[in-house]
Image (cartoon, rainbow, N blue to C red; front, side):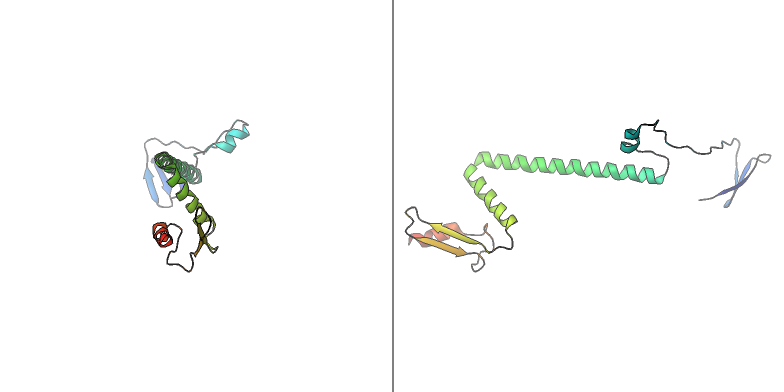
Length: 150
């Protein structure tokens, strides 16, 4: 950016560190500051637009607000999908939701699945770390039921 060194009013030129600039009319402005009129709330919650830092701050706040709006829309869309799944099959939805919570909250804890009959005469305990199933979602309950019924 060039710096003004002098002004030659007779020739109509501004002499800068980069060279001369001709003019017909010249307006000299000393600059300005943002007036908040003594209102601290306005100063705290608004943006000035006097320099690049002000513009950058405003841009960052705009982008943050946009990101929040997109996240809110995605969260709402996800919730709507979950609500639709729950209404379609409440038992399946609740089972899947509980499994997801277990997987998320207990990733480093050894997991067992305990299956029992209605009369509680036999109980099956499956250690997921020793089984071929790496996740509660992968557990093949139908295959276990078939083995149990033999």
